[in-house]
Image (cartoon, rainbow, N blue to C red; front, side):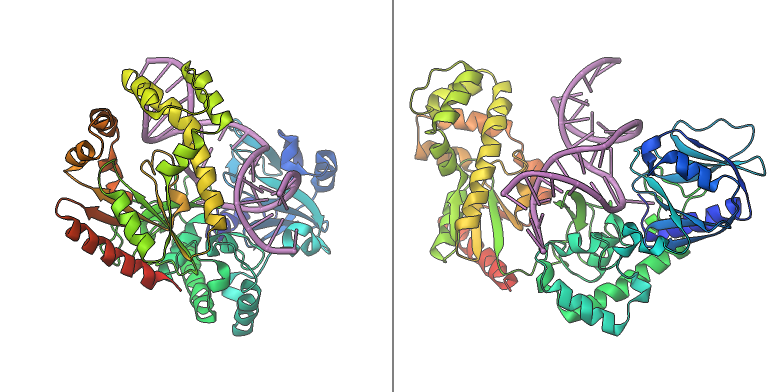
Length: 468
DNA sequence: CGTAGCCCCTGGAAGC
DNA sequence: TGCTTCCAGGGGCTAC
């Protein structure tokens, strides 16, 4: 869990507990926590006295008078705690150091991600964990920024992933990266090669500023993390985006959005942090009969690449493996093609079956969309996805347009009187309204076709202006 | 080579 | 209430 400020606080809190103390005994409760042989680790440290602690990025080093060094990383949950003589080891103790004053220093690590490694004073900086690290934001000079910029021009990963990787800049983690990108008004998914030299100056400046203030505040305390017993920092009170998805942005009226970047939760302001990109992927979502197809067509006419998930599903229903899967799951006997209307009858009779169908269909649709995106040329791509949030697909899109209408039932009846009632019934089961807060644009289609066209035109122009 | 995605673990919270 | 699923302040490894 800890990022640079929290590790710095741990260093400050733990130093007085162990410096000038001799290690009398080491109990390794979880062998994998020690990289290398735990017996060698213990043998080299027992009898040694700790001279000082040091920190590089998120690594914490313990230096001893026998020229040995412990390199440690707390990862997500690691903590060093002092245990008094009459106290029991905690449930999550992994390595316990017995000190010459009768106290123990316990390395607690619920999730077992943390590590410790023995090294030599002369060569510890050459250990692979430390040689990989880039500069801390405070140490980055003008000439370093130019080098970082050169390096970044060759990388296409999202800037957030680039900053989380410690090889160029070290110290930022998931919280502070989100804060820095918000401060610099850079969208976390911006490809690294689009970050300008001027952006880099701002990123470095804000990183140093935010990390420094966080250290001053004692670090951030989120969930139950504490640098030591009874100690907790306050910087979480000053966070502007982390953990605040769904709340109002402090700089504008937009609602902060949560997405996923490289498997990590990411919060940002969709208005302040506009995505600059050479291409944009947009989703249109909403209930059946709301007007999605009309809007999709407006995009098509303006030269966007467009795809309808309903068409994708139609094609999937003709595939042999899909027909087989559905027959197995629903006890049907479709031959060459799944009969959509017959299937709908089954779903209406037992609404629990909808989820089962979605479990089969959604991942396949997602796959098809990804393939389509890869193969389509235009820089603006739009996909109509009726159940975008249910299918958990919203994260792959840069912007989401939602369409709602109080006239869906009338439109469905006009389109196909035969199936209208059934589709209306399924529509009623989906809670589109609860996703409103996740949308970037909302179109209320309650008036004329002209009105709908005007509204979609307006959004098309905004999206075009976002393009690099 | 760069990159996406999975993996290492445990437990609390939210969803059903 | 009990069960399931998701999520968490990190980073290494592997398959493409």
